[in-house]
Image (cartoon, rainbow, N blue to C red; front, side, top):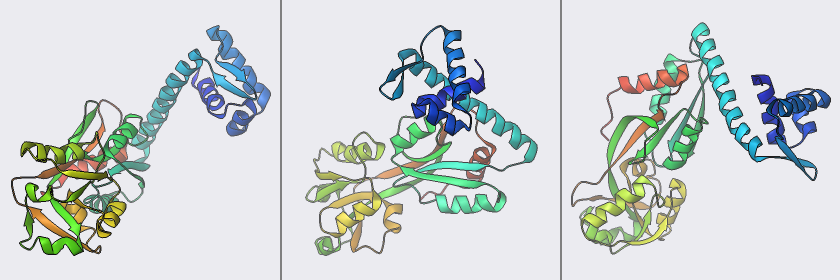
Length: 297
């Protein structure tokens, strides 16, 4: 088998029809059918089974499909690396950002664009665990995530640390006249967590209560920033949120208070897959971030 046949195989596996795969590959159906037949003869096994009008992968076909995707991606990366070596830094910077963690990204991208004006961008927002999966699957090269998070397969560059603050509906603000609250005070409010179970921010906030032997009144988990502020504004509940998130949402009728009984900080980091080729665009972005003094938030 060669890389050309593997691309044919991937198209058939994803389209589930020879005719659709041939159209996608801009080739006639008979030659594509012949290539599939040659592959199956070489391997001495069936890669597909016909189910009605569709072709479904056999167990062996599913295994080959996984390897074919990896090989195809590696080939694309090799071609990209060679082209960049010959023509300078161009291409696309693919970066993910956590739903709560984009405070520095606009400034970083603006500084980067001034140096590398020919690079284009793909920016995707998601929760940190999902971003790790996207980087691991090589759909993204870089991601800005909230810490702590499992980073077994990744390299990480710390970005900034910032305090958490308490956000309540504006109408509730009169109850907190001195501008600060304690975790014990927060326990008397219905609480929305700005994250979902299993993620770092979720456990970081709960840990703060656990250390103080307190039990918060958690009524909701919401990792979407705009929905979170709509819920707080409506009087649905209050939330502990990163300071940068509050600073970007001052237009909502929400009051913000410092948490005064001990440190409560969240951190972010830039991650990428360890021991794997990075495009020149991604490498230069990492170099830019390293060259800048970390914002201590």
